[in-house]
Amino acid sequence: DAAMTTMRVPDVLTVRAGEGLTLLVRFKGEAERRVDLASWVADVAALRPLRDPAFLATARVAYGGGGVAWGEVTGEDGEGPIDMSGELLWRLAGEQTGELMPLAAFRAWRERHGLSVPEAARTLGISPRMAAYYESGAWPIPKTVMLACEGVDARRAAA
Image 1 (tube, one colour):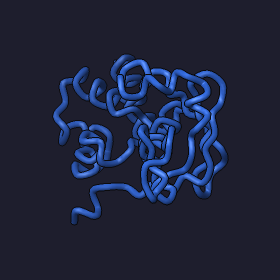
Image 2: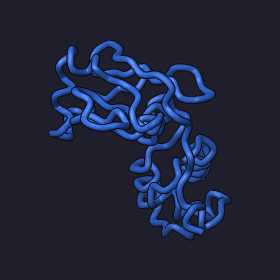
Image 3: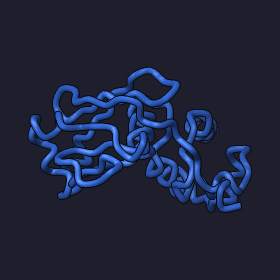
């Protein structure tokens, strides 16, 4: 059952630096997506070299499509001194376009309403197992759940 607790995200096919601290990433079966790395670069000291546009421009597909790396190649899979998983980039792209709900927003919604994870599941009409997957970060939170949370908020505000 452990295989059911993680989601397979599409492989990274291409990557290139965009304007500022952005990447333009194309995932298998999808159009190119813009991923803004500014908050990550500001919060994670190991990523600060990405502030240099020339270094950011060294972005390349690594790990057979499982991620992106920057800087000098240090291994057979294209890894470098800095790398990021394709899953993280895919989630960031989804969250930034509103196609996925950020984990922090889901937790804040649940806590704001004083709901346990099973109570949140009942409120949203989803299984307790899926709510637990969302809460743990094992699965990305789809737009439908984000909209359901907004619907609960709207109903409670109108009551």
